[in-house]
Image (cartoon, rainbow, N blue to C red; front, top):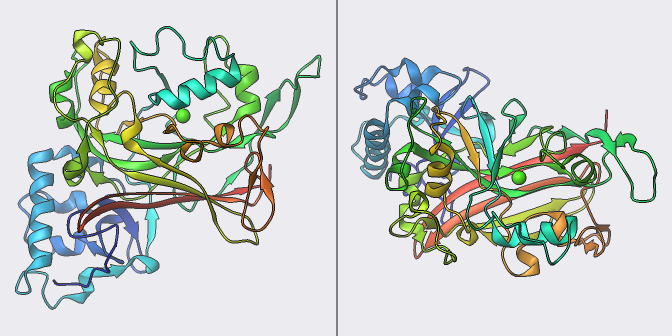
Length: 406
Ligand code: CA
């Protein structure tokens, strides 16, 4: 091995995820996470080992690289895997090609043109329905027929490490006659995964489920910040708006769909049967362990949720097929998020709304304090990894500190 990869690293030889980083001495460029290091692909390109225009490795987003297409990007990934495992490869004796992750600044990996958020966890949709409506009408009649989603806001998607301010807005407390304005009292995270589109379509074209994977470049962890009190007042009749668009945070390394292939698994049985354009063959879910931790300003982290991406009722291929069935076009860099990923058990719920059951059951943290929702100066961290035997492919983390309202 050209460089040591610690055991249990998310960034094993099987992963090779792509991201955008900068260092004190050099501006943003494309890199690959390897163990605790980053392989600087712009520097590797200077060895004249790539057969494409390597200027795209000097860009501040992955969009141009992804646009090369899977045939090329997959070849790059395989080459890197080969080089790293062969002591006489082009990478040998060139420590300057590797940067310590601790000495690098990570940036948004892609320029996101459009962002769509789905609502694809049966458990989450049911839980929210129970709280926002009632147990009888928890799941609306369309939910098992349509991968429900809405168009979100791309401009406020940020990368790990960037703090957010508690958003302000309009709410209507239950005991108030008129709405009031102020900082949200119910700031929440949503544990999601997002996939990044890797191929354009033209207006009028649709992506069938059997081709959908060709259009998915890779995945990131996705924290879809939410303000529950604002949401409750605004969401009828057109759905989420300012309760959702103030920020969503993502992990910086894009893990390719190919790296996740060994972790494919069957999803939940879909009953009633879905319409033909949503039918698919073979396993389309992914077994990815997920967790959420809350770290208070002066305390240690408490893990408040353990979930798994495999719980999703609707899979990514169905989401993409549905999104494009009317001819809506997609572009490289578009972000499609899963919706909150909750499991059946209470400790697998993917939001504070569910974990504290609408604020009625506070959660105890290790420092003795309690949380119903996220407090000022709390840091929320999400992690995710897939593992099978010795093969581990992980996402690292997305971590965000919440500052008081401005
Ligand atoms: Ca969401």
